[in-house]
Image 1 (cartoon, rainbow, N blue to C red):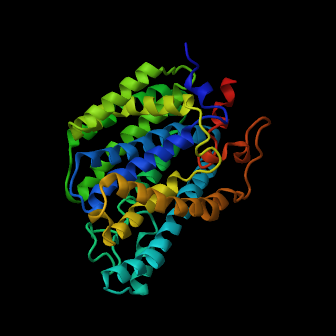
Image 2 (image 1 turned 120 degrees about the vertical axis):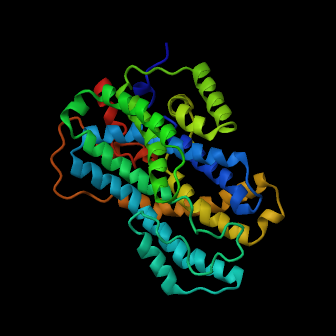
Image 3 (image 1 turned 120 degrees about the horizontal axis):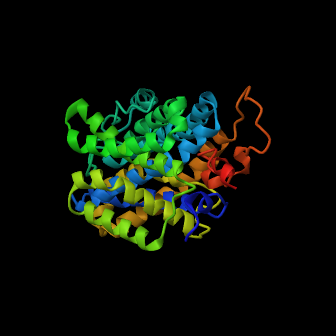
Length: 370
């Protein structure tokens, strides 16, 4: 029998960083159709699968972070992970991408509008999607960054997980609690359906939290959960089949198989990709604006979708690297004031593989099983 997930993911040679990089690349590929001007495609649905995968892995890793920390320490670390890179992205869009868009489109740029864009969206609630007419002429001119909307739900999941695991009964009965959420949330998502207007926020929350809950359940079962390659392949085939047939069925039935497959790949695939630096967040947040500029420049009319996606990835990667080295990693290295002394044997974030350091207690969460 294979080793449990706890063992597979406890070392420095796990591939969760590479898996997250792959999920970000899937999102860029899926966005190539609308942003390159190729029209609608069923393949766009796999961008949603990439986002779902991020939430599943977050649930697994974040549950461990909360179990190891008091709420203040936990949520401070979560905020340090999500906000600096997000704010940096808003600034780059407002004062680099928007001027370029105004230049390419010939409609000019107003710095006051860029400042409003940054300030209006700084809380993760994306209330101001555009900057004047800087997207005029783009195949999809509705927003400068259509990826950032998920970050509000990500942070909401952090808050809910942090609060729930502060309840003694939930913490003592984590398997039961997470199992209830795992079963209930997808059913609620299916029952509610695709609501319109402001109520669509409920649709999005139920869908994304469904995957987060499965990740928490996998963490609770980490010492007992074993994965196999045949089952992981079957899970991937099932998710792919659902993705090309029915969106409602995908949201209802894919949380468990998708999470299973990602954890199996992360635990068994040995690779040096993303082993030292985590560029997945930067790829995710910068992919859309890069593709907007490429679409405005007319690249979509010259090359097929795979080439557009590859160029998008190649142009986004340097921004992701810069975001990690100049913003995200320095923010993670900031020390927290007045922290309680760590019990002997606890692991510090500096002990962790860099590519998962955003989930500060990933490795420490498994200390008990060794």
